[in-house]
Image (tube, one colour):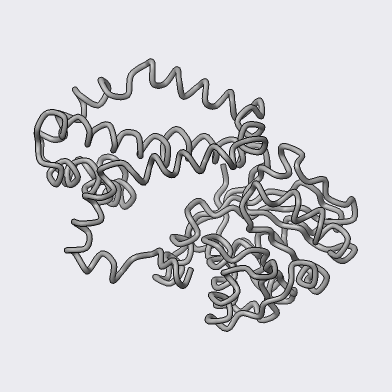
Length: 336
């Protein structure tokens, strides 16, 4: 698979467009501010009346419009609201306002791949999906780097949808680290699988299970927190920088031996079999159906259960004694 970089795209294309970012959450603020810092001058954010994000955007000097007005004004409309809201937002505020021959963009393939949104035939429909949370997309850009991006085209009415999507990806920093061309289907299904089985669902359940195992055996909660959560970032940083071998170079021989003999006892063939079932639920649309039809109510209970887990209380207390963590944090809910 070919990797593309800044040199492979025309970064000036997106600078010549009026860009409206719909939503100013984690991804929205990152895309908008990175594009602005890359030289896109005609830019705004589209937000619903009364949105708590209006003050955050205005504090950054970002022009704010209603979603309908933003769609009507822009050449490029990037929808960065939560997946579960996109269908209604498009139908109510964008479909009849986005200009003829305009570009409709997404940072995730779900709404198009599963048919939640049926775009007008005169529109280009493309995707620029950074492979990381929005706060990381912004943080890496500010450090002079970038987060790799996936780019795809679902509808090419103009004949230039690919070129503009690549230019957009460079504008948010993806051309610094690498851009991969793909499809809405492949991005959507691999993204959902990764976050459910490994990055979010897998990691969180592994952390909680480890913490519970140690505390139930009588070890202090603080020690369990450090061993099963705090050090996760430190280990992942080593893997991120140089792969698994780099991590093994840094850790002790004892830890490395334990990785080989105990890791497969935690992630077993049964675990992989369950992963395949998760992937099948994603591919068939079963997961998306559950999320769209009743998931918004389910998630409230899940969030309450997660917040009540003892590791959250212990972790908050310990992190409060390490001020350098909060001083350099990526997420500031009052600002982004």
